[in-house]
Length: 129
Length: 125
Image (cartoon, rainbow over all chains, first blue to last red; front, side):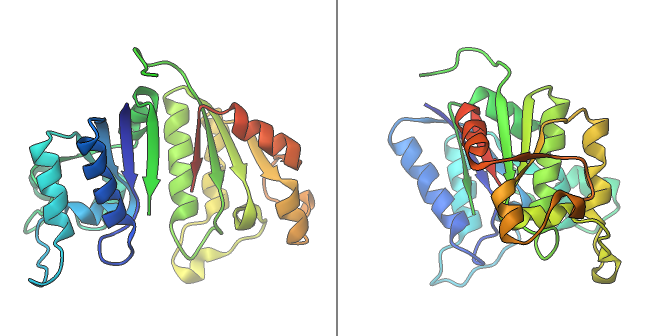
């Protein structure tokens, strides 16, 4: 089956983000396809590659990054959600003259249209957080 | 079952949170509007504490928020006409349609059930 996963919650604040991550790992393990990973609202914080996590804790951002890269998943950060939370890529950083950028290079910033497209092209859409 | 090609779907959005205090209500509205741009069959249902989004005379300036009702006006511009409110949710909160800021169809429990059953996708936010 083709799945789209929507992640609504930030890592560490609530369990939703990690549950979504585990679910995605299971999907791939079971041979399903992830059509798109859509990070919405506070969920965009999962794509911040400037996070520094204590050594005895799980680095959720790093786990997402690995999952996305290894499985070549289409990962999107909602533009409205991401920009206002300071999760931006190099292009947006230049556009708004910011000092740095932090979006993991394996994800893309795009609009809600990508989520609507995913509803049309997936067999299942699940929300987490 | 695997879809072979994209098609129009019936998308039902159920907005269940109050207008302020968290970003659920505005996020749901954004999704509804985005879906309508892609010419999907959109239903928008206010349920539970979501009915508070519809109240007239909201004054969120003091908490640094945009007025949600003003944003709801965009629904008409986007051609979203299937906007509903759950009768039971209103009743439980001692509200009636005269308390609401927008024209809206009131659904009873059976109609809500039908709306959910007939949707290709239900989005709770």
